[in-house]
Length: 271
Image (cartoon, rainbow, N blue to C red; front, side, top):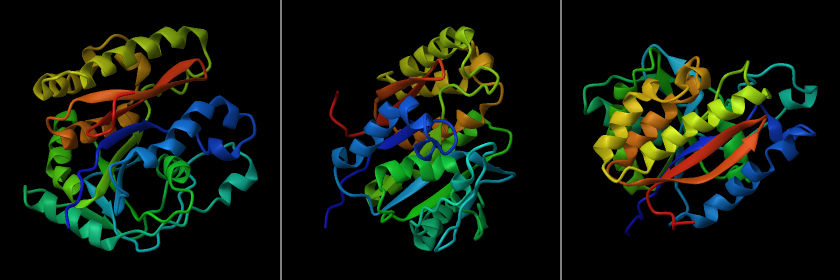
């Protein structure tokens, strides 16, 4: 049976557990609509999802191996009920083993974490996409130090998964400066940096795209948009997995006075 190649995504996942918070649901209404519609646009239903989340880093690349992952309530100051949320998608030790195998074939020994649960960078977008929680999910950590070239290389190592029915998702934000959210002066900062990212991912030459991403700090307002690049690095993994596929911006939401864009590389039809 032929398996259709899956596209790869970078998703700006919004703030905290927003789908379950009154007021915030309205702020991110476009993100909710776009992510809910995304599965119907895929070439086939994925057999599993691999998520590189901006909320998990380790000293070495590490893969989640639990068959039934728990939850990571990695946010503070939200209503009490948001600390009781459950996303009951299964894990996939089989996919975790395949990720480990692919990295090992390139000389990278990945750690394994049988206790890692779903952080909000993982369960928020996946709940919007697959509310029935019926697609298995494995997470891959970032590596501390955030070397963009290394994360691009790891993404390239994982590219074969696309032909094996695995949907690769990088979950972060195109703007992530906690002091800037909601401030008028942050609007131009976020837009200038997102414009740079969009130019990068739309490059027809993948080598040019990847060079622009590696040198992201040269972009306008780069460190104002990302004082710490944890929410940007998942894009590097996605771009590596994209190979020669040209990217496009699938949507951009505007919330808390900043732009939050999401990108796709692969097979989705043009908007």
